[in-house]
Image (tube, rainbow, N blue to C red; front, side, top):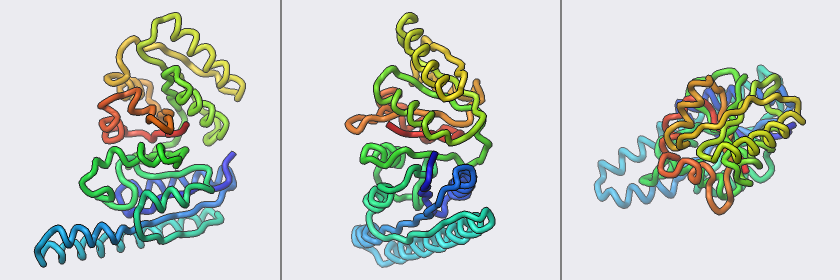
Length: 275
């Protein structure tokens, strides 16, 4: 059960999908929803100063104006969707460091919904790798996160990636306990372990899911998760992938190594990120 949902309204191609998932989940759980926008004016000032030319400064001002208009349109879309669904909702317009603002707001929400490859604007982290945005948020305590793709799809099939670590089973437990979507088909997959260890891990995890009414399919994949997780999700037609994290070390990176960025950039289904 969830009572409060926080959704990022960035005016990006991911925002309409984020709004739709937030509204659908709020209806199922009778939850209230907060839509949040953040504009980092400090970054604008830093870029303007660093650019060194009046022309570059003008372009940055125009870019900020476009971003504000996109966010305002997202707010209108969010308010209309929530009103039509008869939900309790509010909007927070913030300025400053997007990470710090999100961390502050997220303290009292049960689920955060953002785009897989964007939060509030197209270049929110400047020159930093945008793929690291979600893992940075999760490592700072913003979790669980539903990171959505551009295309909305009904959630009927959940793939639970299980490394055998405490962090990954915590993610599975959180996903089961929240009961976000009814009538799910569930599959638990583990990679690389020797067959006897994989069998024990999968059996125990499946027993846990069964306690919540889910008869989970299980599979041990002998190959590397770096190469096979996304392909396995595609082959099984997963609608959401569940992965866990550690405060000290993101489980997604631990599992996928250097391909964590590739997963966030190329996944075409939502990711449920938790601990």
